[in-house]
Length: 355
Image (cartoon, rainbow, N blue to C red):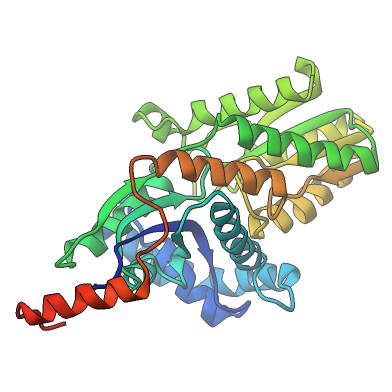
C-alpha cells in the first residue's frame, strides 16, 4: 500500500478447491497439495508421505480425473464456475447495501491460492480483510485449514492487515431459509419424496472425540432444515459421505443408507447436501450419479438430487448479511476522492516518503 492510497476493506471467500483441468496431471497436482495437509490426513508425515507419493498419487489421479470429466462444463469445473458467480453476486449485494469493499475468491488447494488473493487485496489497499471459509459447519479439516493458510501468508508479510474470520454459519436463519427454498423448488417440480436424505461430508470419527464441533453442527443444521420443511422424524435422515481410508468415519454412511432405502422398496428418495454451498465433484458425481446408481441397484425407484445453493438469490442475500454482520465496526464507506488522495500523497512525498 502506497501513501495516498485509500485504506480499504477486503472480503476473501475461500472454498476447498478443484484441479485446473480434468486430467490426471492436473488432478495429481491438486491431490498432492490437498492430501499433504495435516489437517486433512492426521497421520504422522513419516508414515503418510511414502503412502501418498508411493501409492495414492500413482493410482488415484487417473481415477479422479475420469470422475471430473463426467461433470466438467464448457466453462470449467462446476465448483469454480459457481464460486465465481458467488464472488460477483456478493460484490453486487454488498454494493447495494452501501459497502465499498473488495471481494475476491480463493481456493484452499489449487488456484487461485489464498496467498495470491491476499497479496492482491493488499495491492488494492486493503488493510482490513474478512476471511469467509465457505463451509457452513466448522471443522478442523476445513475451516481451520483456511486459517492455517492465512497464518502462513501472514508469517511472511511485513505489514499484516487486520484479520477477521467467519468460522461458521450452520444455524444462520438466512442460510436455513435458502436451503429450504432450494428443497421446495425441487419438490414443486418433482413432488415430495418419501424420504429426504441430508448428506454431509464425512470425517473420521476420532475428530468428534477430540473435540471437533463438526458432527454437532451438522446435526443442528439438519434439525433446523427438517423443522422448516415440516418433516416428521421418519421422513428424513442425516448421513455422511466421501469416506477415505480405513479409519472409522462418522455414521451412517450415505451410500449404505441409500442401499438400505432401495432394498426397503422406498418409492421416492431425494438427497440434499447442506454442507456444500456450490455443486462440485462430491455432489454431482458422488451423489447425483453414484448415489443414484446405488439406490436403484438395490431396488429403489425414483431418485432426486437437490442442487446446492449455487447462485440462488436467497442464499446470496443471506451470505451478504453474514458478511455485513462480521464487517461491523470497520469503515466501509466510499473512498476519498482522487483529489484528496493525490494531495495526501504529495504531502507524504514532501515529508520524505519514497512511495
